[in-house]
Image (cartoon, rainbow, N blue to C red; front, side, top):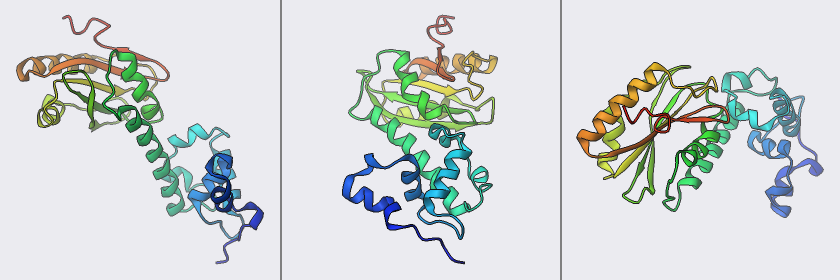
Length: 228
């Protein structure tokens, strides 16, 4: 199969080497991830088609899955995997940058801000635990479980086990609602109660349970569930 070569004037790698990544367009950056074109399209043309597939909103590319991207002519499994991996790495970098330097968490909004972008595009529920030291500084962040569209099963030992091993003084738990509505479900309330009971026995404070939606969040503590 003949792979369509990219004209020298269109080679994003050369632009990046001489002028830096900031001068590259979204399609040029994506072309570097895709690396090669197909028999009919250059890498940039394929990148433009991928961006068009996401309604010209590069932010929506973070929601794309391999099987969706392979529906695009010229995007095979290898290219689709490269794109999905790059998007996931970007999310993790943003999340870890927030936690770097043992940032101190002072309120639930900071927790939501840290996780909202990371979890906003997820189509499954992710339940996470943020382990804190005695100064409420972030020591680590753990993915406790990954569920389906409307639930992520959680047991207290899965939350507090890593916290005990890391000698954490406190824990904030959080999960997303793929529906975008952060209203607590009955299961969310029951999980919060079990975690509060376990925290009292173990001696590691549960600071809050934050539910992340689409641009909004709910603090179970602020809603009064910690006072019951």
